[in-house]
Figure 1: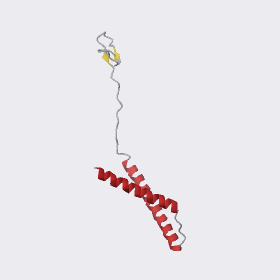
Figure 2: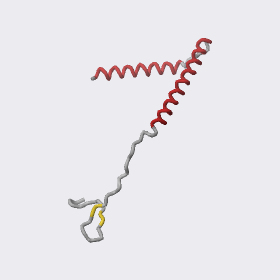
Figure 3: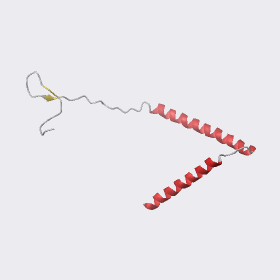
Figure 4: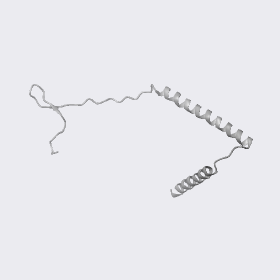
Length: 98
């Protein structure tokens, strides 16, 4: 593009005057809170379902432990313990570097 060149589309008025730039209509973005209540209710419902599921899972585990039939996956448990220890170590190192 050379100095003085323009890539803006222009329209020529019927009177033969100087061309006027064509202004594109801009889309107006609108933010509304109309769905906020619906979203809040959806989130609250999900939280309630998760809490209920967690409660049922804990009750089931409690019954299994009391009955002596609970058998945790030792490999999975070890992996989770090591992952948590690794995360703790990384966090401690990142705090000490500052």
